Image (cartoon, rainbow over all chains, first blue to last red; front, side, top):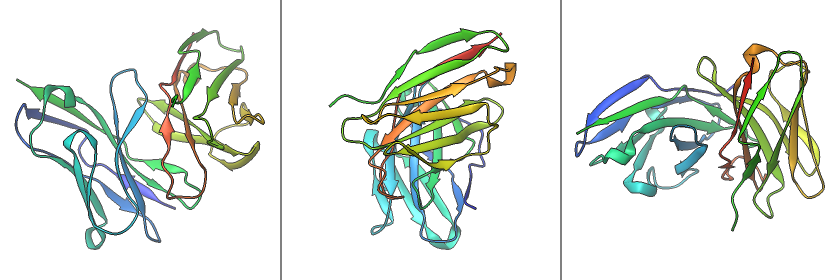
Length: 112
Length: 114
């Protein structure tokens, strides 16, 4: 069965600093990976996805993620964080039916 | 085009009651999935419907059920509510054509059981 681990429950970052959120997955075949963001009281918004091809994928809001098969990782990065990036971020892997297995999430706090 | 619509946005129910939540997917999408989100358990998959058939089911008791109509709209029902059913219930729609399809989420229904 697939699983996703997000080691960091909570990250605090200064506005303008870079951000990296870690994600490790376990899946028997080629993984289909996603990063979602959730603002308080809202649903999930897709930031980016990896299906195949280039291992560095670009998403919305200036985010990017790098797929590393050897490390079973799919870390999310942003070069310069804005106050509006404060939210909870979820990494997910899809099974063959498209069912998503989510990590526990990382809460990002942005300080002035 | 319109996104995924979930109604109602908020609900307060009493233990022992039952509740029905509704989800209207994006036009053309045939798959609707339901997830429960709680602070303790995170995001957990409930079930998925594709063309009116339940195609996948998570590890939830039989009190949780769902259905999908011919227009792809879906409802989930929770009977004999327990305090632990308090959660944000999220619906996601997709084309349902396998793992490489993108799921779009609604804003959720916040259920509080008292």
